[in-house]
Image (spheres, rainbow, N blue to C red):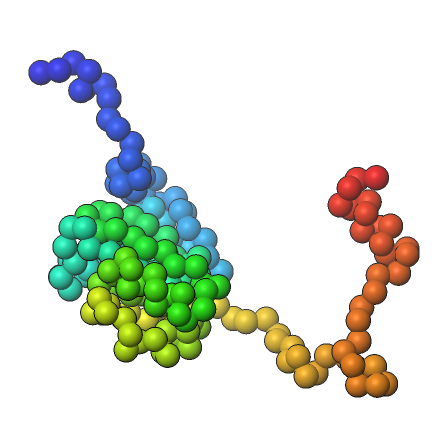
Length: 182
C-alpha cells in the first residue's frame, strides 16, 4: 500500500460537494432570496438533478445547455452535469434568438434548461434546434420583480420628450467624493 495515498485526497469540485455535505451538513451553503440550503440539501439537489438527467438518457459526453440567470438550478447544474459525465453549456442570457440557436446547434446539446422569463427568446427558434430533445422549464417563483416602470410613463417635458435627469453641481461633487474619495 502506498503510504502517500493515506495522507492525500484530491479536492475536486465534485469531491468538494461530497466532503462539505458530510463535514458541514447543517451549515448554510446557499442563500437565494428567502431560501436557504444547507450543504446536505445542496448535495441532495445535485444528486437529484444528476439522477434525473441519467434516467432521461444523458450519456457521457452529451451536452446539457442552461439558458437561465444565476439561480440555484444553474449552480446545481455546474456540479450535477459533470457528476454524470456530461458537458455543461451555459448560454449568455443577453443573446438574441438566432445566436442562441447557433450555439445550441453547434454544441449539439441534447437537453436545454430554460428560465421561464427567457422563453420568448427560444420560442421562435424552437423548431430549428436540431439536437435538442428535451426542453426543461425553470420557474423561479421566489423572484419578485420590484416595481416596474413602463417607458411610456417616464416624465415628459412640455414638448413631449422624455425628461433627462441631470445631476446638479452639488450632487455631482458628492458623487465624486463617494466614488473617488476626494
